[in-house]
Length: 321
Ligand SMILES: Nc1ncnc2c1ncn2[C@@H]1O[C@H](COP(=O)(O)OP(=O)(O)OP(=O)(O)O)[C@@H](O)[C@H]1O
Ligand SMILES: [Mg+2]
Image 1 (cartoon, protein in one colour):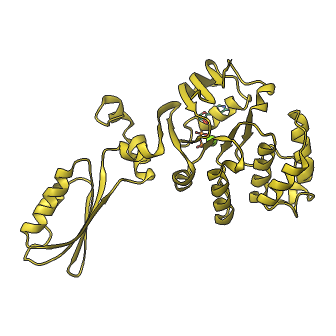
Image 2 (cartoon, rainbow, N blue to C red):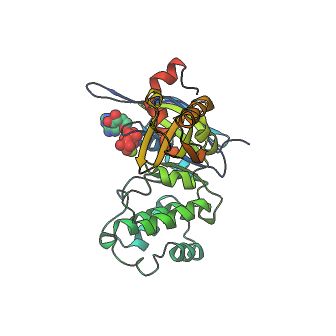
Image 3 (cartoon, rainbow, N blue to C red):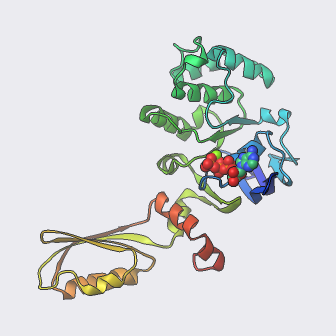
């Protein structure tokens, strides 16, 4: 299937002393219907990438393919296909009402306001009672919802959200999560930049990790969790011998041992089953009775930290890409 958005070799350096190389030849693909979450530490280049895709910044090099159209940079007319909700509420007119903001942006982008769809979203976003109030009097969550609603009313096939959950209360965050999972009931594909890994684990179909202007990887979320080639093991044993915690356990990295009364609990992160078997054998030969064992794939947060922290090892090959 042809990607909806395809980026190749995208580079951007901000001038200055010294200049900042914010994007260093980034390749990225967004398939129709996908929710691609862009992760990365502060300053990784996520917002810069989004500003390039919003037409606010011209890249120094690279191409952007929108469906079958190839662009060197995004122009105003391309914003009929790309709806962007930037970080915060910087694009809203505070002295306009919500409704005036809706009309302003749709007129600016050359879209007709479909009252039926507006009513549908007002109901969905629970903004019906506030749409004729000044945006200056809105809470942060209401502004965020209004910005997303305006973006959706453009019916652009690609929706880009920069840090959409920032400052949202848990109720609105959960609402937003459900709406993204359902693609807002539209045929929308979504690119979002965020630090909210729990949110990503819920809504994203794919994850891209940027670090210092380089895209470290882009993977379906399910593949990413298996990527670290390690599992988390949990072992519970009942102490039943003179030396219940074998001294050999201290030789295992990423192994933590705790004891409460006669219960010993061990957490292990290991990339091979052998470490786990050796620990079980050591516990056994110390006379302990093993009462519970289970293992699981790591969550997204552990994988993220490993990938970002192991950047050097990854480059030199010891961390499998
Ligand atoms: N207008 C600018 N002028 C100069 N440098 C900039 C400008 N905007 C961003 N940068 C620099 O570009 C790099 C990438 O910044 P960017 O805002 O894209 O990161 P980010 O991944 O969005 O970070 P965060 O997670 O903090 O939002 C950083 O080193 C930043 O200092
Ligand atoms: Mg940012």
